[in-house]
Image (cartoon, rainbow, N blue to C red; front, side, top):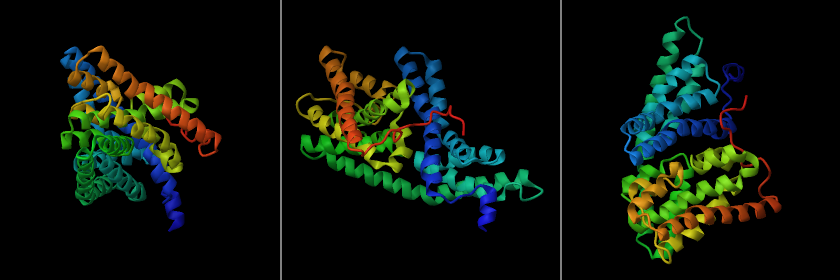
Length: 340
């Protein structure tokens, strides 16, 4: 059995599934939902419907993009990769990005097992891959939906606490949701976060993105700064699994800054921007839409969304590097251009 699995490229390795595959999943997410949202936002702000439609289309293809990315990351044969489009789409429909990842992962491995084992491979391989993906989606969809609602309830509980406590709870939870393979934007919309709670969520999400972008600059240079800073901090998921300590600087930055946004410098936002952080600058655009474009609002956004997270995360990460808790390369990301 082990020889058969090795021949089919099925390693049953946690590293392959939770590091390599997650890295590929993040690229699929970036190439669909994130870039689509950026294009759509530009279209909305410039009143250019062509870009709005283009962005909406790209966002709607998140599931298929994740499916293909995961299958490609697992070195699947062509038929399995193409069939993973359907698996990813089914998973996304029933469980969001996390559901898409799980459906694509399991169906890809099963598809690899049957690939080229029969004379009717062109039928058997896509059939097994698609059926497995849909079945996995059906089984895990309700569980993921329940988990999302439970997480959302926890965030809503946070919004009911005192401003300082609320700011910390919402910023940390929403920031972690943005970096994890679940949709912080979906949570914000599902809960209809608005007002000061949405402002705290935006600070927490921005801290994750800007914090990771700046603290990982030595590994990822300008390309990584842009990909993480205005793309998604989810690109660091695989690295977090390898060394969870890298999550400390941006998380503490959000926890420290959010109370300022709920007390001293009140920050507000709407549900559309609450879970986006600095992705495509949607969080900032929606902040201005909610609070206006006055100089005071600009100052708050610059300090709480950019300068504050950058400085705090950089100082903490440099301290952790000196202590040996973070090593060079721990935050290196793949942008899809490296050869395997």
